[in-house]
Length: 211
Ligand SMILES: [Zn+2]
Image 1: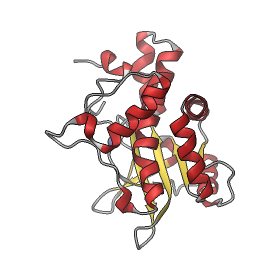
Image 2: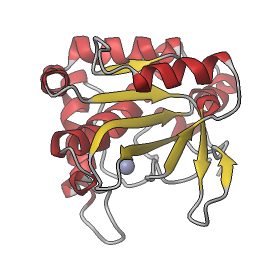
Image 3: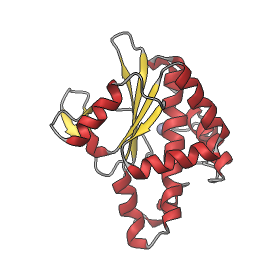
């Protein structure tokens, strides 16, 4: 399991034929989709529903995105491939927890952001330890709070890659970093604890990882 919670990668929806990839391409291509945030995976869909129910700030942000016809598509690693800096195309890193990828045009304009959450990797850490479903759900909500509200929403509110909301750098005050500050707004409204570190320490799964 990688220590960092997320990085910004160039993700492409899988080019190989398959029902899921087709469904995801359809989600990305449909400008009339009714919700500004969509997920094909049922675990992610349920988590998005719970967050929307419990968080006023989340609901407000999504209403603004809907009005601007801007979209977030939440995916699992099975739905994407990763384009590396040297233009190779590789599978999603199997131990990475989550990534965010703005879909930018040649001028850097962004109206869709893809978020990938590695539900299988999160379950693989929890399940051998007998975690309760609620503990796994809470970690998925914390990760979505970070990736969606911390990273995806700022890109879309700016409508441009310049809207990047940063993670803390080495030596930075973690709770002042843009993405952590925003994540903690949602955590507070959902009573999911406060994040105070740059790694995975505030996820329940961090206690289960081998040391
Ligand atoms: Zn981040």
